[in-house]
Amino acid sequence: MNFYGKNKKQDKYFVEIRNCLELAYWISSDIDHFVENSKEKINKQALDMIFSNSINLKEFIDKTIKKLEILEGDHKECALLLANYTKFCLEEFDFINNKKRESESEDVKFSRMLDADIDFRDQYEKYFLRTDIELYRIKSYKYFSHALSALYDFSAYLDDQLHDSEDSALADIKREEILKHISNAESILGIGCRLMKANDKSLQDFVIASSRNSIISPQEYFQLQVEFNDVLKELFFVQRNFYNQFKKNQLPDLAEFNLIEYETNKYYSRLNEIGFTLSKIVLDELRIDIPDFKLLSPSMIKNPLDFVKVN
Image 1 (spheres, helix red, strand yellow):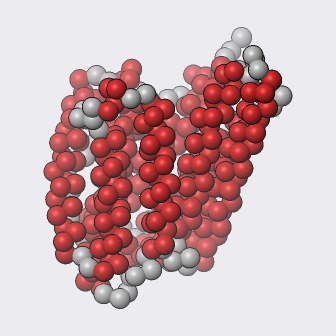
Image 2: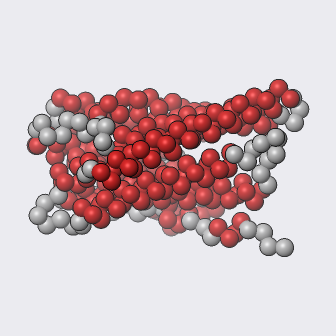
Image 3: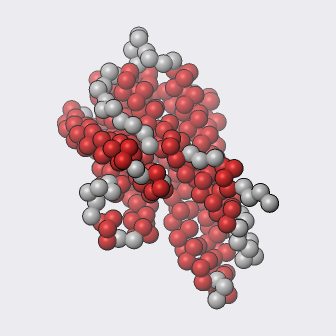
Protein backbone atom coordinates (compact mmCIF):
# COMPACT_ATOMS: atom_id res chain seq x y z
CA MET A 1 0.00 0.00 0.00
CA ASN A 2 1.25 3.51 -0.70
CA PHE A 3 0.79 4.55 2.95
CA TYR A 4 2.92 1.78 4.45
CA GLY A 5 5.97 3.03 6.38
CA LYS A 6 4.39 6.21 7.76
CA ASN A 7 3.16 4.59 11.00
CA LYS A 8 4.38 1.07 11.77
CA LYS A 9 1.77 0.41 14.45
CA GLN A 10 -1.04 1.45 12.09
CA ASP A 11 0.55 -0.64 9.33
CA LYS A 12 0.34 -3.75 11.50
CA TYR A 13 -3.26 -3.06 12.51
CA PHE A 14 -4.18 -2.49 8.88
CA VAL A 15 -2.47 -5.69 7.69
CA GLU A 16 -4.43 -7.65 10.30
CA ILE A 17 -7.77 -6.09 9.34
CA ARG A 18 -7.15 -6.26 5.60
CA ASN A 19 -6.28 -9.95 5.71
CA CYS A 20 -9.22 -10.73 8.00
CA LEU A 21 -11.55 -9.05 5.49
CA GLU A 22 -9.94 -10.83 2.55
CA LEU A 23 -10.08 -14.17 4.37
CA ALA A 24 -13.80 -13.58 5.00
CA TYR A 25 -14.30 -12.78 1.32
CA TRP A 26 -12.57 -15.98 0.17
CA ILE A 27 -14.61 -18.16 2.53
CA SER A 28 -17.86 -16.52 1.45
CA SER A 29 -16.87 -16.79 -2.22
CA ASP A 30 -16.01 -20.45 -1.67
CA ILE A 31 -19.49 -21.18 -0.27
CA ASP A 32 -21.23 -19.28 -3.07
CA HIS A 33 -19.13 -20.94 -5.76
CA PHE A 34 -19.92 -24.39 -4.37
CA VAL A 35 -23.66 -23.79 -3.95
CA GLU A 36 -24.04 -22.25 -7.43
CA ASN A 37 -21.98 -24.82 -9.33
CA SER A 38 -22.11 -28.11 -7.40
CA LYS A 39 -25.73 -28.61 -6.45
CA GLU A 40 -25.32 -32.35 -7.04
CA LYS A 41 -22.70 -32.43 -4.25
CA ILE A 42 -24.86 -30.77 -1.61
CA ASN A 43 -25.36 -33.52 0.96
CA LYS A 44 -25.54 -33.54 4.75
CA GLN A 45 -21.77 -33.33 5.14
CA ALA A 46 -21.54 -30.38 2.73
CA LEU A 47 -24.45 -28.62 4.42
CA ASP A 48 -22.83 -29.08 7.84
CA MET A 49 -19.66 -27.46 6.50
CA ILE A 50 -21.60 -24.62 4.90
CA PHE A 51 -23.59 -23.83 8.05
CA SER A 52 -20.50 -24.11 10.25
CA ASN A 53 -18.51 -21.80 7.97
CA SER A 54 -21.42 -19.35 7.78
CA ILE A 55 -21.84 -19.13 11.56
CA ASN A 56 -18.11 -18.72 12.12
CA LEU A 57 -17.91 -16.21 9.30
CA LYS A 58 -20.55 -13.92 10.83
CA GLU A 59 -18.77 -13.85 14.18
CA PHE A 60 -15.40 -13.36 12.50
CA ILE A 61 -16.51 -10.45 10.29
CA ASP A 62 -18.35 -8.73 13.17
CA LYS A 63 -15.20 -8.89 15.28
CA THR A 64 -13.11 -7.58 12.37
CA ILE A 65 -15.41 -4.62 11.70
CA LYS A 66 -15.09 -3.53 15.34
CA LYS A 67 -11.30 -3.39 14.93
CA LEU A 68 -11.66 -0.59 12.36
CA GLU A 69 -11.91 1.85 15.27
CA ILE A 70 -8.18 1.50 15.96
CA LEU A 71 -7.24 2.77 12.48
CA GLU A 72 -6.60 6.37 11.46
CA GLY A 73 -6.13 8.43 8.29
CA ASP A 74 -5.43 6.61 5.03
CA HIS A 75 -5.25 3.30 6.87
CA LYS A 76 -8.82 3.70 8.06
CA GLU A 77 -10.15 5.19 4.81
CA CYS A 78 -8.77 2.28 2.79
CA ALA A 79 -9.91 -0.35 5.30
CA LEU A 80 -13.45 1.11 5.36
CA LEU A 81 -13.64 0.90 1.58
CA LEU A 82 -12.55 -2.74 1.67
CA ALA A 83 -14.88 -3.50 4.60
CA ASN A 84 -17.93 -2.07 2.84
CA TYR A 85 -17.20 -4.04 -0.32
CA THR A 86 -16.57 -7.21 1.67
CA LYS A 87 -19.85 -6.82 3.59
CA PHE A 88 -21.68 -6.27 0.30
CA CYS A 89 -20.19 -9.46 -1.16
CA LEU A 90 -20.95 -11.47 1.98
CA GLU A 91 -24.59 -10.36 1.84
CA GLU A 92 -24.85 -11.20 -1.87
CA PHE A 93 -23.20 -14.61 -1.40
CA ASP A 94 -25.31 -15.51 1.64
CA PHE A 95 -27.73 -18.09 0.24
CA ILE A 96 -29.11 -18.83 3.73
CA ASN A 97 -30.33 -15.35 4.73
CA ASN A 98 -30.40 -13.35 1.49
CA LYS A 99 -34.09 -13.07 0.56
CA LYS A 100 -33.20 -11.36 -2.74
CA ARG A 101 -32.00 -14.70 -4.09
CA GLU A 102 -35.57 -15.98 -3.95
CA SER A 103 -37.10 -13.16 -5.98
CA GLU A 104 -34.31 -12.02 -8.31
CA SER A 105 -32.95 -13.65 -11.42
CA GLU A 106 -29.29 -14.62 -11.53
CA ASP A 107 -28.77 -12.03 -14.29
CA VAL A 108 -29.94 -9.20 -12.02
CA LYS A 109 -27.81 -10.41 -9.14
CA PHE A 110 -24.69 -10.85 -11.27
CA SER A 111 -25.13 -7.45 -12.94
CA ARG A 112 -25.32 -5.77 -9.53
CA MET A 113 -22.22 -7.67 -8.40
CA LEU A 114 -20.27 -6.60 -11.49
CA ASP A 115 -21.23 -2.94 -11.06
CA ALA A 116 -20.20 -3.00 -7.40
CA ASP A 117 -16.95 -4.80 -8.23
CA ILE A 118 -15.93 -2.28 -10.88
CA ASP A 119 -16.85 0.69 -8.66
CA PHE A 120 -14.87 -0.76 -5.75
CA ARG A 121 -11.77 -1.41 -7.83
CA ASP A 122 -11.94 2.10 -9.32
CA GLN A 123 -11.63 3.51 -5.80
CA TYR A 124 -9.35 0.88 -4.26
CA GLU A 125 -6.54 1.05 -6.81
CA LYS A 126 -5.46 4.55 -5.70
CA TYR A 127 -4.00 3.08 -2.50
CA PHE A 128 -1.42 0.91 -4.28
CA LEU A 129 2.10 1.64 -5.44
CA ARG A 130 2.72 1.37 -9.17
CA THR A 131 5.18 -1.46 -8.45
CA ASP A 132 2.66 -3.51 -6.45
CA ILE A 133 1.29 -6.64 -8.18
CA GLU A 134 -2.03 -6.11 -6.43
CA LEU A 135 -2.59 -2.92 -8.43
CA TYR A 136 -2.28 -4.88 -11.68
CA ARG A 137 -4.53 -7.67 -10.43
CA ILE A 138 -7.16 -5.07 -9.55
CA LYS A 139 -6.90 -3.44 -12.97
CA SER A 140 -6.86 -6.74 -14.86
CA TYR A 141 -9.84 -8.12 -13.00
CA LYS A 142 -11.71 -4.87 -13.65
CA TYR A 143 -11.23 -5.45 -17.38
CA PHE A 144 -12.47 -9.00 -16.89
CA SER A 145 -15.57 -7.70 -15.11
CA HIS A 146 -16.25 -5.47 -18.12
CA ALA A 147 -15.89 -8.57 -20.33
CA LEU A 148 -18.40 -10.46 -18.19
CA SER A 149 -20.78 -7.52 -18.42
CA ALA A 150 -20.53 -7.55 -22.24
CA LEU A 151 -21.14 -11.30 -22.12
CA TYR A 152 -24.76 -10.76 -21.08
CA ASP A 153 -25.54 -8.71 -24.18
CA PHE A 154 -23.61 -11.17 -26.32
CA SER A 155 -25.65 -14.08 -24.98
CA ALA A 156 -28.93 -12.27 -25.65
CA TYR A 157 -27.97 -11.39 -29.22
CA LEU A 158 -26.65 -14.91 -29.78
CA ASP A 159 -29.99 -16.43 -28.77
CA ASP A 160 -31.79 -14.33 -31.39
CA GLN A 161 -29.24 -14.31 -34.20
CA LEU A 162 -30.80 -17.26 -36.04
CA HIS A 163 -33.94 -15.17 -36.51
CA ASP A 164 -32.47 -11.74 -37.05
CA SER A 165 -29.35 -10.83 -39.05
CA GLU A 166 -29.08 -7.55 -37.13
CA ASP A 167 -28.80 -9.47 -33.85
CA SER A 168 -26.10 -11.60 -35.45
CA ALA A 169 -24.09 -8.47 -36.26
CA LEU A 170 -24.61 -7.12 -32.74
CA ALA A 171 -23.47 -10.44 -31.31
CA ASP A 172 -20.23 -10.15 -33.30
CA ILE A 173 -19.68 -6.63 -31.95
CA LYS A 174 -20.17 -7.81 -28.38
CA ARG A 175 -17.90 -10.81 -28.95
CA GLU A 176 -15.16 -8.44 -30.08
CA GLU A 177 -15.78 -6.31 -27.00
CA ILE A 178 -15.42 -9.35 -24.75
CA LEU A 179 -12.16 -10.34 -26.45
CA LYS A 180 -10.80 -6.78 -26.22
CA HIS A 181 -11.47 -6.58 -22.46
CA ILE A 182 -9.95 -10.01 -21.80
CA SER A 183 -6.87 -9.15 -23.88
CA ASN A 184 -6.48 -5.94 -21.85
CA ALA A 185 -6.79 -7.98 -18.65
CA GLU A 186 -4.05 -10.35 -19.82
CA SER A 187 -1.80 -7.49 -20.88
CA ILE A 188 -2.05 -5.51 -17.64
CA LEU A 189 -1.55 -8.64 -15.53
CA GLY A 190 1.54 -9.48 -17.58
CA ILE A 191 3.02 -6.07 -16.78
CA GLY A 192 2.37 -6.65 -13.08
CA CYS A 193 3.99 -10.08 -13.17
CA ARG A 194 7.14 -8.68 -14.75
CA LEU A 195 7.31 -5.91 -12.12
CA MET A 196 6.74 -8.45 -9.37
CA LYS A 197 9.94 -10.26 -10.33
CA ALA A 198 11.90 -7.01 -10.02
CA ASN A 199 10.78 -5.89 -6.54
CA ASP A 200 9.48 -7.21 -3.21
CA LYS A 201 6.24 -5.21 -2.94
CA SER A 202 4.17 -8.40 -3.13
CA LEU A 203 5.73 -9.37 0.23
CA GLN A 204 4.67 -6.19 2.08
CA ASP A 205 1.91 -7.71 4.20
CA PHE A 206 3.99 -10.79 5.00
CA VAL A 207 7.04 -8.72 6.01
CA ILE A 208 4.95 -6.43 8.26
CA ALA A 209 3.28 -9.44 9.89
CA SER A 210 6.30 -11.73 10.17
CA SER A 211 8.33 -12.38 13.29
CA ARG A 212 11.60 -14.10 14.03
CA ASN A 213 9.70 -17.38 14.29
CA SER A 214 8.00 -17.20 10.92
CA ILE A 215 5.87 -20.18 9.97
CA ILE A 216 6.96 -20.14 6.33
CA SER A 217 9.67 -18.38 4.36
CA PRO A 218 9.18 -15.22 2.27
CA GLN A 219 10.03 -17.36 -0.79
CA GLU A 220 7.12 -19.72 -0.10
CA TYR A 221 4.73 -16.80 0.32
CA PHE A 222 6.07 -15.26 -2.88
CA GLN A 223 5.58 -18.52 -4.76
CA LEU A 224 1.92 -18.60 -3.74
CA GLN A 225 1.58 -15.08 -5.16
CA VAL A 226 3.12 -16.35 -8.40
CA GLU A 227 0.69 -19.27 -8.48
CA PHE A 228 -2.26 -16.92 -7.95
CA ASN A 229 -1.10 -14.91 -10.97
CA ASP A 230 -0.66 -18.07 -13.04
CA VAL A 231 -4.20 -19.27 -12.28
CA LEU A 232 -5.61 -15.85 -13.15
CA LYS A 233 -3.67 -15.90 -16.43
CA GLU A 234 -5.09 -19.33 -17.26
CA LEU A 235 -8.62 -18.16 -16.47
CA PHE A 236 -8.24 -15.23 -18.88
CA PHE A 237 -6.62 -17.45 -21.52
CA VAL A 238 -9.34 -20.11 -21.59
CA GLN A 239 -12.07 -17.46 -21.69
CA ARG A 240 -10.44 -15.60 -24.57
CA ASN A 241 -9.79 -18.85 -26.45
CA PHE A 242 -13.41 -19.94 -26.00
CA TYR A 243 -14.98 -16.73 -27.30
CA ASN A 244 -12.57 -16.69 -30.21
CA GLN A 245 -14.48 -19.71 -31.50
CA PHE A 246 -17.75 -17.80 -32.01
CA LYS A 247 -17.05 -16.75 -35.60
CA LYS A 248 -19.35 -16.66 -38.61
CA ASN A 249 -22.26 -17.93 -36.52
CA GLN A 250 -20.36 -21.13 -35.74
CA LEU A 251 -21.10 -22.31 -32.20
CA PRO A 252 -18.79 -24.60 -30.23
CA ASP A 253 -20.24 -28.06 -29.64
CA LEU A 254 -21.67 -29.21 -26.31
CA ALA A 255 -18.43 -30.88 -25.23
CA GLU A 256 -16.60 -27.56 -25.57
CA PHE A 257 -19.27 -25.78 -23.51
CA ASN A 258 -18.91 -28.44 -20.82
CA LEU A 259 -15.13 -28.17 -20.91
CA ILE A 260 -15.10 -24.37 -20.54
CA GLU A 261 -17.48 -24.70 -17.59
CA TYR A 262 -15.15 -27.22 -16.00
CA GLU A 263 -12.06 -25.07 -16.62
CA THR A 264 -13.73 -21.91 -15.30
CA ASN A 265 -14.95 -23.63 -12.12
CA LYS A 266 -11.51 -25.17 -11.61
CA TYR A 267 -9.74 -21.82 -11.79
CA TYR A 268 -12.23 -20.03 -9.56
CA SER A 269 -11.90 -22.86 -7.04
CA ARG A 270 -8.13 -22.60 -7.06
CA LEU A 271 -8.23 -18.80 -6.69
CA ASN A 272 -10.41 -19.27 -3.61
CA GLU A 273 -7.91 -21.74 -2.17
CA ILE A 274 -4.81 -19.65 -2.81
CA GLY A 275 -6.45 -16.38 -1.74
CA PHE A 276 -7.58 -17.99 1.52
CA THR A 277 -4.13 -19.50 2.12
CA LEU A 278 -2.30 -16.20 1.54
CA SER A 279 -4.52 -14.36 4.02
CA LYS A 280 -4.32 -17.17 6.57
CA ILE A 281 -0.51 -17.19 6.39
CA VAL A 282 -0.39 -13.49 7.25
CA LEU A 283 -2.90 -13.88 10.09
CA ASP A 284 -1.00 -16.90 11.45
CA GLU A 285 2.17 -14.79 11.42
CA LEU A 286 0.30 -12.19 13.48
CA ARG A 287 -0.96 -14.96 15.79
CA ILE A 288 -4.58 -14.02 15.11
CA ASP A 289 -7.15 -16.58 16.21
CA ILE A 290 -9.04 -17.86 13.14
CA PRO A 291 -12.12 -20.11 13.15
CA ASP A 292 -11.70 -23.62 11.77
CA PHE A 293 -12.96 -22.85 8.27
CA LYS A 294 -13.24 -25.74 5.80
CA LEU A 295 -12.99 -24.96 2.09
CA LEU A 296 -15.51 -26.61 -0.23
CA SER A 297 -13.89 -25.65 -3.54
CA PRO A 298 -11.36 -28.54 -3.66
CA SER A 299 -14.22 -31.05 -3.94
CA MET A 300 -15.42 -29.37 -7.15
CA ILE A 301 -12.47 -30.41 -9.30
CA LYS A 302 -13.60 -33.11 -11.68
CA ASN A 303 -11.68 -35.23 -14.14
CA PRO A 304 -11.45 -33.26 -17.43
CA LEU A 305 -11.55 -36.58 -19.31
CA ASP A 306 -15.23 -36.75 -18.36
CA PHE A 307 -15.84 -34.26 -21.15
CA VAL A 308 -13.97 -36.18 -23.84
CA LYS A 309 -16.21 -38.31 -26.02
CA VAL A 310 -14.75 -41.63 -27.11
CA ASN A 311 -16.34 -43.20 -30.21
